[in-house]
Image: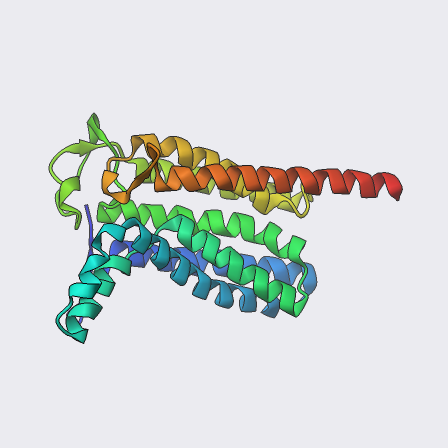
Length: 263
């Protein structure tokens, strides 16, 4: 496919390019949508900036956990330069779920500390996250990472940085996930625009994405990411995400019904 471009001697991956496209699409969407509702877009900008720290930290940490079999290299490094190379090898990638959970934690902290309207912010964040991830998965496809299983009708990668992806036709699961994310964006945006499921859209996103992710993992071919009790790392996390989000979604719905009856 198209792993990336070199500008002024520096290689920039396709994932980085599409991730930037996602950032410059999803963030303005979230900021202007919030500003349209409240008249001030700064609170959403502040939350997004703090969330970015959690996204980078969480994504890198979970990537490092999937590489736990390589941690011994850190103790065998001969000098600080070699040690730093191993750190980059082990923690230099990113796992979406790690970034998502890290970003959620960081956002929750700043929302609570600043007293921002949590329901409104999370409702706007739900379609924004889906929009961003849709672009990101296109980058995965172009770069040849997060690839699918071998199928006769699949796409054959020839320049993937992951050598195991090259040379055989593979199911384009990255594009399937990207399409699903863009569909989620449209659905969540419509629900928000029509005032449906107020305060519950992010929980709905987590439930729908978690179910989809659990299923699509069966068609992933990059088995090096690790397994727990026969399930991939992402499938294992999806179970807890779906259960937790479903419980919260049910609680919020029952609470709203009780409040509406009391009113």
